[in-house]
Length: 166
Image (cartoon, rainbow, N blue to C red; front, side, top):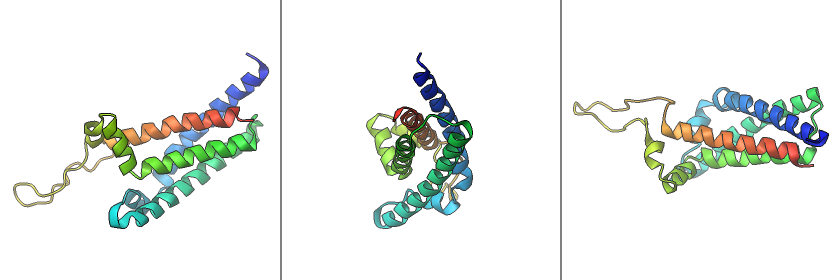
């Protein structure tokens, strides 16, 4: 392995690790309840959904850009401005795409994963006694698992781009 490849590998590992950690914080602590509850709206409320999603992705990207930029500075990583910007852009665009929800749900359906996507989702409506039936409010859904794994795949690709684009 040449020294250039060693520096790229180190940059890839640092950027990937930092983006994975920052992803968890930005997606769960920085995102507001309003953004989380509205970013997937479509139909006659699609613009509300798009604005909520854009605000979430903007704050998410500010967090990842700050974290990666800080590590770039602290560790003097071998990364270009173009690599940095492209990596952040790939992460942001793919994050926005998935967080529209209907897009990821559609992809899951085309890949034969619609049942997994719906796994654990709360059932709406009323039970036999006329009470509202929202019986499984949880983060542990198939939709959530597919969403998070989608983001992590693209974080890997964004880190690779950040490391190798000169």
